[in-house]
Length: 113
Ligand code: 5GP
Ligand code: ZN
Image 1 (cartoon, rainbow, N blue to C red):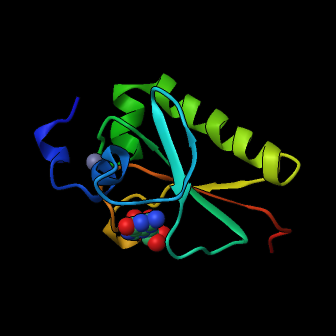
Image 2 (image 1 turned 90 degrees about the vertical axis):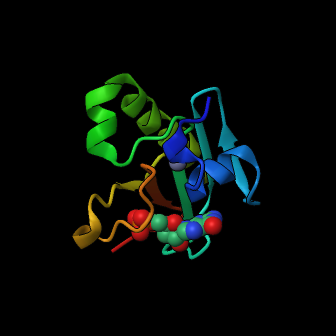
């Protein structure tokens, strides 16, 4: 169910299908889609369907959901690049977080520097 804070959230809109996205994976708890501005050959965003502002809020509220996001990333990387991936959580404006619905950047599909 949608919280009030999710009503105007761009990633809540993507999860609802109100904004189109290229789905990579979905289950009851998470949605994964291609980043609009990829920084690797494969650049997927993995988000929980429930709205949390950042990874710290998620880790405190539901650590098993955070662990599940890691296994979703692993499953994507297993399919596209023999299980190797980089997972990044930008946390806070000064760290580059621009969307305040927690998302894991999953970078894979190539050998990275
Ligand atoms: P942040 O800067 O918060 O860590 O990452 C936000 C990411 O979301 C950026 O990499 C940006 O390209 C991506 N993004 C922002 N808006 C959209 C959108 O409407 N669709 C998709 N597919 N990606 C988006
Ligand atoms: Zn949201």
